[in-house]
Length: 358
Figure 1 (cartoon, rainbow, N blue to C red):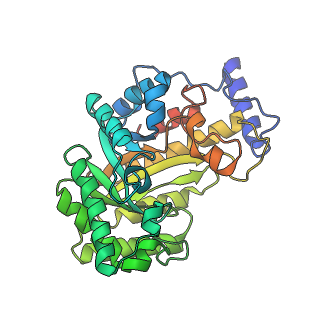
Figure 2: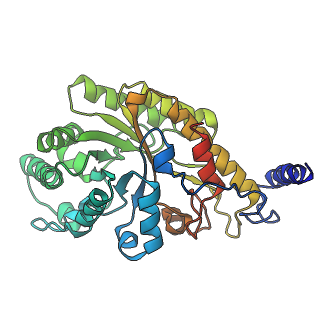
Figure 3: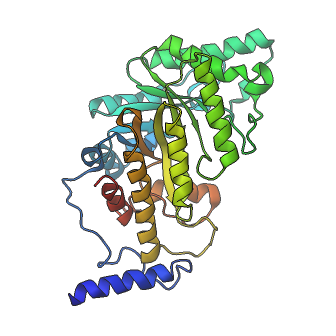
């Protein structure tokens, strides 16, 4: 009894001090590490697919990373290997090696592959930015890229983020080369062309901000419903869910449930939970932060698990461990957003995910 009382006291004290993060015991503390049976894995324990966005270089060169992906996940997304610039660097050249490696790895290990992404406003290759042609030529460019890629992976990639991040935070379509050259119809056309190339692939619209911007969320939902009404072949909506531990549970639930109301499949597509959203340069990952991260993962998974089963496409985290997160490089700060630590060991967040489906 004394030991349990000490653990409770430690959790209370560290949670009270979590915003400082400086004086708390650095996680993992032996008293706060939750032992997990290694025979229990995410892919076995979850009642829906649980995946990760993976880095092909790490798959090839980091045995610990590779083995953890094999053990824990049954759905894989390419972090970068299937984006336009990586696959189609010049007009008449496609580079398939990394994407093919990922697909082959997935097939050998019984994993589903979710393709990411066919059309994205960000970082188009220079040949696209410099392309000269009328509207028909641009339409052909769009169609040829989408259909070449989707056809290449037909029967191997189960689903695609067809269009990614087309909506700005103010609820208008984001300015990009595709909008400039083809107008708003580029979105519907992208889905149509993808469906023509592989009628069996599930097609998603993917974006961020559902959980923090009512304006953006409403605009996305209206756009998706409009596509459905037009008969455009769209099967699902991806909520990126790059969120943080201070985001309110209500906002997170509203994001998920509003997407469910479209009737489409829902994919939590790029989940990570930042623990340093205020960019504190010398923050440490305390026991208090670990407990809050665990609770937030549990809430998201629990909310998702409650939606209709036929709309559960799955949950995907954006990469595997804290060592691999995009956040540290993008924001140049310490952060620990994922369920595995820098040594590829399970964190309290991992137990939170498991607890979300109890």
